[in-house]
Amino acid sequence: MAYLGIDVSKDTLAVKLLLADGQQEQGEYSNSASGFKKLGRWLKPHQVEGVHVCMEATNIYWEEVAQYLHDQGYKVSVVNPARIKGFAQSQLRRHKTDKVDADVIAQFCQAITPSIWVPPTPEQRKLRALVRHQKALQKTLTQQTNRLATCTEPAVKSSLELIITTLSSEIERLQVQIQAFIDDHPDLKQQFTLLISITGIGPKTAIGLLAEMYDLADYDTARSAAADAGLTPSHYSSGKTVHRKSKLSKMGKSSVRGLLYFPAITALQHNPIIQALKQRLQAQGKAWKVILGAAMRKLVHLAYGVLKNQTPFDPNFLNNPSPST
Image 1 (cartoon, helix red, strand yellow):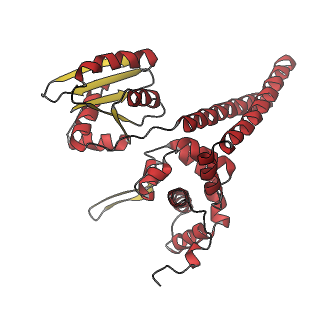
Image 2: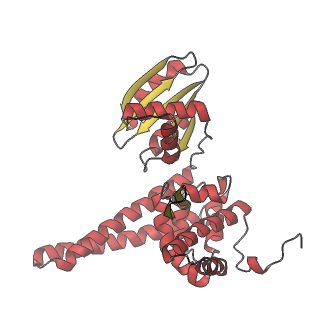
Image 3: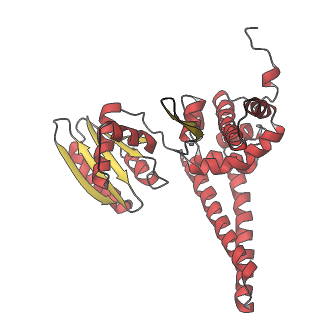
């Protein structure tokens, strides 16, 4: 078995290949369709015993190359960058370059043998593309609306108004298209229905979770899902004197954290399970930011639970006796 580490950036792929006989090879390719094909041709002679590919989940830049290599029959692992950073520190790595990072990732893959990445289905990929496109248009709409608020030149103001009207119309059209797409696919429809059964998670949040955490039900535990979203607490203490405040690790999918901020506020007001969590934390003297972070994390746990068990949310779960009592 050979191990390939890929350090992914927006434009390039730095690669390091560890061969079964102890030899090593490295290279660099563009992060594009043509670069993927060149990388595939470079790897072909080393497929006799198989190649295990590993890369970090860096923004969205890893997605296309991971899909390509998976489609070519390679074992692909996509890991949280925090794991690679921790491994590098354990190896006393003092330098950080693309080539060094590729080597660290390859060494990590060889030593740890991380779990194999499961790519999204074609339906999940299309949903993700539609949702991200709508989000990009919404960002542009906000920018143009802000410009209009301070614009005094009539000709520019007229142009901005036309742009805003067009963007608003297209965003609404995409929303209808996205919902229709979900309704037309039974698996997506079932997951959507389960997610919106959770008090605090509305249609927009449910769609965002389906797009950005399509594999939510495939995690081993709810905690590991929350960790991948960067919603687990990070503690720092040393000896008797160094005790820093705990905070969210934020080592994971920022898009998911952004989705859950306002739903968590709603859940703190209306979801009985999260209200109970809030009361426990308030009794412990926890700050509002800690409580809000815990609510966001709990929403991921609840979303994981309903999808894993294929059972709608039960707001009275805490009041129901367990089967053993």
